[in-house]
Amino acid sequence: MTKWRVALVDDHPIFAAGLKKLLEAEGDFEVVALAHSFEEAVAKILPLEVDLVLLDFNIPGGNGLELLRKLREAKEGTVFLMLTVEEDEKVVVQAILEGARGYVLKQDSPERLLRSIRACLSGEVLLSDLVYSRIHHLVKKAVPQGRSTIREKLSPREQEVVRLLAQGKSNREIGELLFISEKTVKNHVSNILQKLGLSDRREIIFLALREGFLEEAK
Image (cartoon, rainbow, N blue to C red):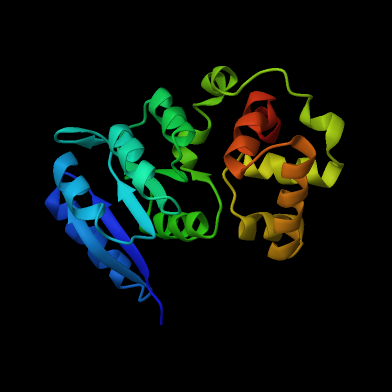
């Protein structure tokens, strides 16, 4: 079995060791690097081929956003997921804009974390349920203005998909809620990207939040 190669960056050794054990118990993850500071992370991760980097925001010698920028420059194709206690809305938005595929809080359940990791590795973008409802006002400032509204370009079903993306749902969860296959969900997402002239799911989510899809879902 081919395993996902994972690097962990967290300044709490006990937490990091527990996370390593959780991942490797799944059977298809291999933790190839474990770092507890900015410098240690750079030294250990840069020479390696890694599929996923899980990183905390608060680390000695820098912060997770700075580390994300540095590693992304050299690790094209690697997936980055923030795993932290930091709930500041500006940090969440900036992390996604900097290229993090997801943002999960340590308060989330292990099951939620594992689902988020697998979804991110499959190309999805996920934020913790605990931070989604707190970032809408900042998204309005973070996303470039001047686009046509979503509703003018998308079918009712595509708007449903966008609304569920704005709630942090994965492809599998969207399929279950709309009674369609995961493949059909992926096709809808591809069509949405094309119609809106967007490059990835992060832009769909930010645009949806900016235009009030999260409020409509409540």
